[in-house]
Image (cartoon, rainbow, N blue to C red; front, side, top):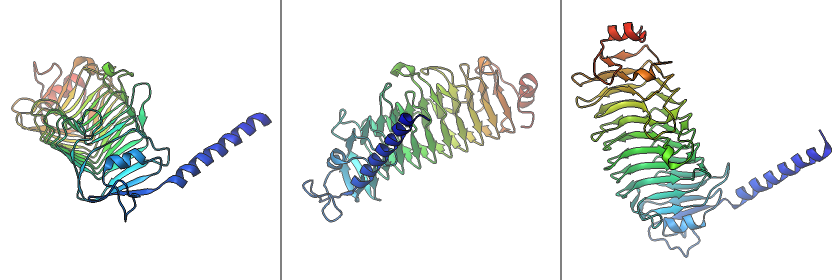
Length: 368
């Protein structure tokens, strides 16, 4: 290797180490508590009063511990750094029940173009738009945002909403009672989201909605998502699915429990997405449709190369059943080893197939 190139690499490594050391050196744990004062130092003995004051001052590596009480929400547009996220940690008994001042006073926690951020432990209720919202831009995606252990209930549009965020982690949250749309909504071209271990119930539309949404710029595709181990029930009285995927590709939907679903169970389709929901794996899920529900698995709009293995697909509906797949989604479709109710369709319900007819006509589910 040429000496000049070697020196350049060494100098870059030194600068990176200095930057990391600087982030670690400034990392501080701050406190917010009822009865605090924003003129205080933000220590455990002298806490601040408001979440917004903390959000205005934190930097990479800082952690804000929020003591039990009721709070007004906050708006954050500062990013952490790799290995040094900004963390807001709520102790049990913290409730945000007044919207933040930013972005139209509609959200409880609003992250605007903020990357490397962790939101942990908050309860949020009564927000006109979202309990927790995290967004980037199509040409400047936010990244590495974690939302965990949040209880977002009885909010307007969404419990948790994200847009244009890569490498997102949404885990161990409970979202319920969204009166206009969904429990969890991941949107707008953000790749590699992980949505796991959540409970989403009683939302008027989708329990979990994932939509690439080409109308919002970007490629309109969400790829390499993992939706795993979620419990989703009593959603969809005004339509939708337990898990709804529009323009989602090469992703894995596994080990989810969906029951008392009043619309679809799992849907793979395209309306707003930049392409069809293709190349997805649906494995080890249990879906039990309510008597007013649609189909347990709904595969439409050219959602080719879908793999469906080892699922339980049952319904209490009088004539809908296990799988509704469109003819243009059949190429590359593989389905087997599923426990199913004996009702299928390949034409949107214009006619119905028994399991034996489905096996004969499609070659699928030989061991189901």
